Length: 430
Ligand code: NDP
Ligand code: HSE
Image 1: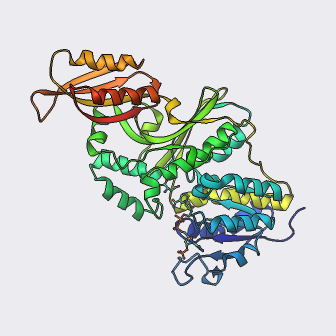
Image 2 (image 1 turned 30 degrees about the horizontal axis):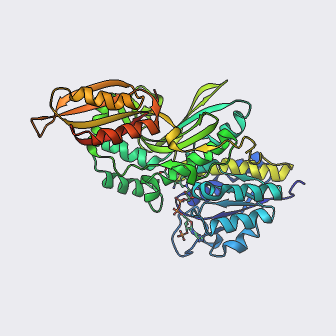
Image 3 (image 1 turned 60 degrees about the horizontal axis):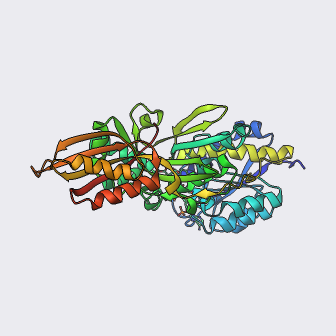
């Protein structure tokens, strides 16, 4: 049934993203009305503290702390408050009332998306979330709709702007990790608690959303192998450049045998790889599909205005559905592929070892690697800077399972000629 008159829009949250959503709703009202086929009426904006200044575009009269009451007055609810509760309860309330929901909340979708998708399906209403993955970049709709006729084999992405900014700053200006994180917070793209960014939780939630869509299988953030950037040193970042690589925090979702593996961890990418040139807080997602081949989606993955663009795109779609009738796609999980652990991922390792500088050491290292069925691609030896009788080996392996590679590193650690494992990094994109 078509909605008559204006489509009533409630916005939950008026922070970095919400302020820009409200500004664009107000400033582009005429264009949005033409695209929707009816005016969008902003009925209120829920916040915790109505006395906080919100900028010129936000009418203070619209601010309320009664989020539930606001939800009950809306045809479209835009959730940009973040966190799990009360966001989940408010979204479910909106859905149960038949309102369409637009959310940017990857944390909630990564933890409990299926509950929300099922509720929206049961209520016959829309739940859209383009802004939840990679900010302004259209990636949810291309994976969910444009590639629905293809078979996606791999998704490789830089989906966290904060960590990309931090690693880029460390590589280009020699800035320390903590200082770069502080800057990312000031610039508005770090999460309220930046632990979510630097420990990889934010990227893991996005990886789970992308994997679910790409493989028609339920994947939650808890299924994603996750390593953050906190253990990376300035040396790791600097050394990457000397071997023709850049260090990135990657989200990888791929078919592996009869299942899928989803992982988030720092990795070395060759400098020629398209993702290697993604700088600052920009994001990019590289999709490999059987028929389409390689596709890359690039743009601003964080920040108020870029994220608001993705939110508004969804608002127009769900509001138009209200006006003309009909609804968008529901959750697709028919494939139900098993989600495997990182041990089954096929990757390559770069291992830096400090060894005793004695005859036969290389042969011993070689033997341990071979015992695990792993093959070495390159070895570079240099004299250890501090100790004259030690040498540093930089070993890069050929592809093998993560299980075989990590077992190799564990056994190398136990070799008497190995003084110390200096670093272990995966190499991707080859
Ligand atoms: P902010 O912390 O800047 O804003 C959150 C807003 O929600 C604030 O206005 C806050 O009110 C309000 N709020 C929080 N809890 C409640 C509550 N219980 N009741 C009422 N209002 C509440 O967050 P962001 O704008 O940065 O992020 C919003 C969402 O968008 C998150 O899910 C985030 O992950 C996602 N996102 C953010 C991006 C970014 O670049 N910032 C990019 C992509 C997605 P008050 O101001 O009064 O405290
Ligand atoms: N904190 C997130 C980031 C915001 O840095 O990418 C966008 O989701």
